[in-house]
Length: 101
Image (tube, rainbow, N blue to C red; front, side, top):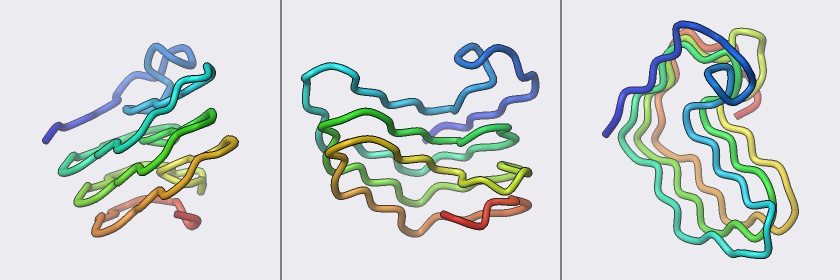
């Protein structure tokens, strides 16, 4: 239950990046990640980004995406090898340019 609002873009990770960034560039395994009941407001890039490998069971539910991705890209980005079972369910979008969630 958080509110993430970005009003001032800066460098890639210091403000211009996503509100939630999950990246596994090691040999670890990330499992059972839950992102529930949040508000993401005014993001220039993906509000949630999941990158890397060996990331399993990411559950993204009951979130609100406001004023995000006005350039037409997805609010949630998932990219990498061996990322399985990502669920995006019961989320609300308002004033978002994203067409490919």
